[in-house]
Length: 68
Image (tube, rainbow, N blue to C red; front, side):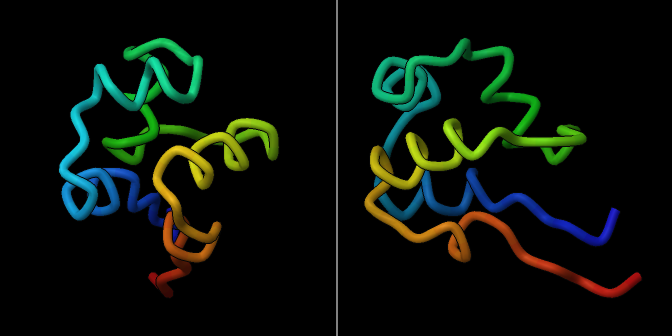
């Protein structure tokens, strides 16, 4: 899929664990893991907003388009 999710990159930059991010965002660690590994097929704007707030970043920091 040409959309790459960089949640793991932002977590590393913020030195934040999956557990901590899960608590801040309010979604399960399983769903965060799906996002982090790039296996997600969709993301709600509500979740994207919560991730941006928790990680202090912009949507473009989390999502990237790469041509195949």
